[in-house]
Amino acid sequence: MHNKPVVILSLDKLYDDDIVVMHFAYNKDIKNAIKSIPGTIWNTFDKFWYIPLNRFNPDIVISSLKGIAEVDLTELKKTDYNNGENQKNLHIADRELKDRVRKSNVVRRYVRFLEGKRFSKSTVDTYSNFAVDMFLYIGKRSISQITEQDIKDYIDNSFVPNGYSISTHRQFISSLKHLAECFPEMKISDITLSMPSKSKKLPDVLSEEEIVKLIDNARNLKHKTIITLLYSSGLRIGEVISLRLSDINIERKQIFIRNSKGRKDRYVILADSFIPMLKEYLTSYSPQYWFVEGTPGKQYSPSSIRNFLKHLCKVSGINKRVTPHTLRHSFATHLLENGVDIRYIQELLGHSKPETTMIYTHISKKQLMKIQSPLDYIKAKQHKK
Image (cartoon, rainbow, N blue to C red; front, side, top):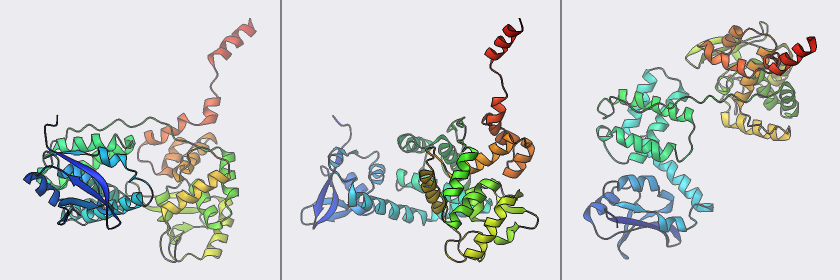
């Protein structure tokens, strides 16, 4: 027995268009809630409410009916609406809804607040996207009506089931604290939501041989240059795409990294062996302003770098999960293995705290190889006797 009225969702067709039909016994509260859902339409001929599939978002339907009726997705799940063209339509619908929320006064005000705190564009985008997703889940309510329980429900039903990483979860909690600061009228002024502990997982690192393979197998000069720069200078992907031509000083063998993570500037090394490739690249591609450009004068996209790096790993027979940041981890680890002081590595990487850089002491192979097993001590003693 259901304690509340039930709204059953099922997939159907109307004039060859896919629709999601909402079946329920007449209830004025349910009808008013359904009318408030974006995209809902009343079929006057057959007397039912429906949503075109390309505008359907189950999370919004559930949140709009929260406290009024239970939503039964059983019939909907029986149909194969998640495949093929329908899947594409759902993605389009989700994107359209997100764009609508992103343009709302609340999100715009939050973005201005974050920009006023001088956060980087990447951080502003990440935090505002968290807000958009949360508002979509919670549904149409004023900012002052959002409670801490709403947010806990959102975390339980979105972050955990979708397998978001610990670092993403921590980012969301940080963004939430700024949201509460921006909107004091929210009922979460005393945030008691727990921040999950950081993962202690060590970063993946490529061997020196694997680095050489990656560079050698890059046939496209632009790709080869980007991969080589990421590794040889230990840069973040955002630092590469934001690098200006004027920031590269070949004579002094230095690269100036401006306004990086934590709003810090720093200098990094320009490898001697990279300079001939760099000059060839600049002559061949003639970038106008940015070091690497997609179209003339426009920044290269980070997704392009990730995609060709993935392809390069496949061609090179590297089965590890490799991202552009893996090359930065490899740069730091190889420096440490070659005897460079950890304090210099910290400076080159732009780390604020030495503890962040110390992780590389745990993955430096040569350092580990210096440690003798206690069995060797025992055998050595026996041999002396």
